[in-house]
Every structure is written in C-alpha cells, then in structure tokens.
Image 1 (spheres, helix red, strand yellow):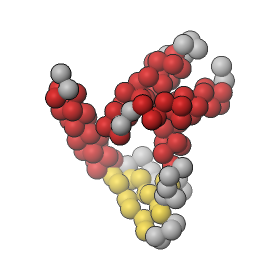
Image 2 (cartoon, rainbow, N blue to C red; image 1 turned 90 degrees about the vertical axis):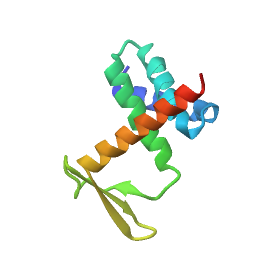
Image 3 (cartoon, rainbow, N blue to C red; image 1 turned 90 degrees about the horizontal axis):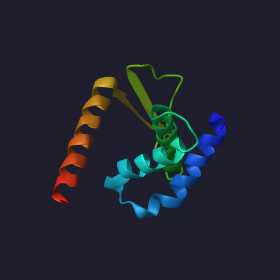
Image 4 (cartoon, helix red, strand yellow; image 1 turned 180 degrees about the vertical axis):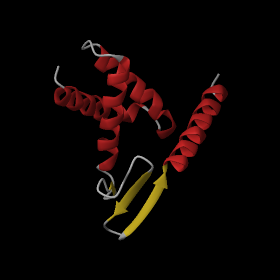
Length: 114
C-alpha cells in the first residue's frame, strides 16, 4: 500500500475506534492502529509513525492551532493559534520532558488498573 493510502486507512481506523478509548488510553488506540496497519506488511516503526501522524490530523480537527513549519526547527516548535493570535514555542527539551511525564502518567494509570 502507498503511504497516502495507509495514512487514510489510519485516519479511518482512529475515527472508527477513538470512542472506545478515553484520553489517557490514546497510547492503546495508537497501538491498535499500528497493529492494524502492520497487517498490510509494513514495519512496526513505519506503522507507528503513520498512526501518530494520523492521530495528529484527527486531533487537529478540534482546534485552529497548528505548527508553524516555517519558524520551527529541529529544536524549537512554534504552535500558532490564529483565533487567539497567540504563539507558543516548545523547545526539544520541553517536549522531551512532557513526553517523559506522559509516559509516567500512562504507566501509573496502567499499574492502578491491575
């Protein structure tokens, strides 16, 4: 399957199944979408990337904010909200810290369910 076809398949999967998972379980939803895409014969890494890109697109439908690709670099991501006219910059360090915090919260949530 071509990348655009897989991207479309990922978006369709996420839209069809997002109601089955609460926000803290988005990792589970992405994991299920990844598994679904892997059935077409692509690697886990590629399927995960496509799933996460599709998740970003699906979630973007609920906001006017977007990443300003012109101003962003590998180390600084500028997020613009044209409605409020506000711009926020996240450094790579900010995003790494946020990612670590999210992973800890997900792990803690998973351990309380058992």
